[in-house]
Image (tube, rainbow, N blue to C red):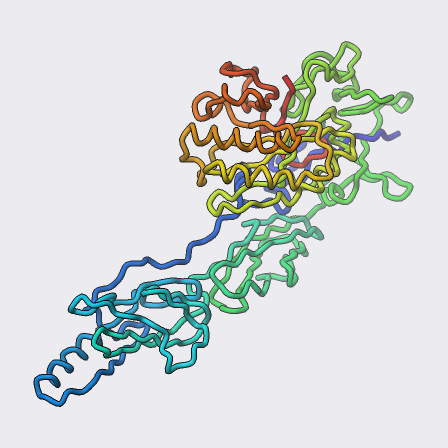
Length: 539
């Protein structure tokens, strides 16, 4: 006979933590499509500053610079001395230049001179005698490339003489392409998407190619499919400039290894009406898995099970665990009858896009009864307000599974005005959802724009965020670690709002104020979530 087991009990063939099972080596190094990026402290994609330095070359710079050539014109004088003076003036006005050897689309640089040899202001303009094709824009002595082509700039001196400079603008000279993820591991027949971010180019269109179509193929949207075991590179090349490209390494492995559970038992799948040994490729294809029942006359359970509405955890011998238990890095309390207890402090999680797709019904069955879901964040460098791309599917999935929800927003506000913006943004995102928990402001270090503000300013940001939401009938609070709550925020002035403490320890030691919730680990394992997850307990 066969008994059904939870998928979390199976050794994931794409996880490095399951490298060796019963003498067989799994060669996979990471989850399919895992990005080599960013922390998710909530940080946003950062912009690239393509501006050139605003340093201004001196008036003696030769006009034969690579970016343009200068020509001069001036009036004539009826006297020899006037003619000599005009020639000297023309010689001086010839010495105009642009402050960069090349000029690219989106790049600004400085024209010189600003004044003539007598200290009189030089006026720069786009030459009215030439068609204005929109190749550059000009503000004072700052010229900016707008699109590829040529433009003529004119310098007008105080005595009425002029000199012109031809500017050649190139598109994408400083452009770049970044691919996510930076590497990819697939099973034969498996697929995942590589995404390209193009910056510094007027067109984001790219062409995708594979270095070996016998290993993997890639379509026009960056979808990579494993064809045969081996290694290859997938490259995205700008359609605008063939010299701008980026590549990711792709490793494709055979999926013929037999799956085993965490206790070393061979795992089976039901294919039609028959059971067969499960292969590595079946891990992503099937949702129900089985092991052989050692005693066919009785039902034996392993792992998490919900029976008659009560949640239990069975060890490898089929026995219910009792008392305090740590399962896959998560702390649980079970009664003497094996039933999961929630009265000593309800257990919850907090999630964002970094936790990817979540099976919320499996999460609910594991004993989780609340989730704090990231709704958005402010960019660490750009300051833009951005909705978490997984927010809506997460909050809807959690509520549909019967899990109570709250939200959090990763702040980079540097003053009270931006705190109001963030609170208003959160308020707009939660419309239509019934929150059982507060909306929290996530206050932590990220290497971003808000790290350097002082304690008073940071406290004002926290208070303004909470008060703005409270004025609209939404409970609010702040999230921070022990160090920040102790020394970088004036926490005692914020106790009218919920305090969410992050401290990874056997028990919290923060004593400056009371706290309502404790995040005790970032390495929890929960059925229904493929990644490690933050775990929380209500206090």
